[in-house]
Image 1 (tube, rainbow, N blue to C red):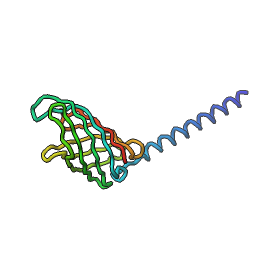
Image 2: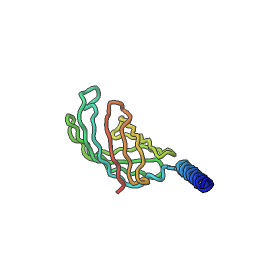
Image 3: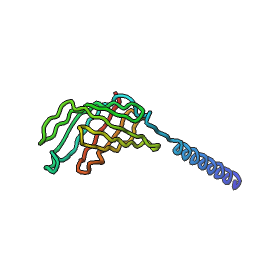
Image 4: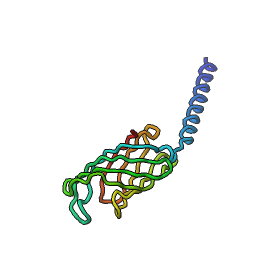
Length: 149
């Protein structure tokens, strides 16, 4: 009886070790690149920001159509509405993006000339979706969901 129990425990231990090694290997092989984020994405964004430089904080909402070229360049047209600043339709913007190996993304763009915005995003569903926050300017507290269309 002892040999059977010992044998069963040994087989279970080897199986667990092999499973853990396979899991670790699959996690290490994860690799993302700029080409994973490619195509047209629809964004819905909301949050708060200064209504104007040095001004009061306002709530802001918007919808954006953004084109990622798969090689690190991004263009967009946005429609943004601020609770104080009002509605700004069909603004063109452009910038760059970089996908890190861990599937995080840094997006730098100018929604209007002279305003640099940086987003930090994560890739969801093999590039079909991104979820982002505005990391710069610091006074912007905006989140967005990007879905490939």
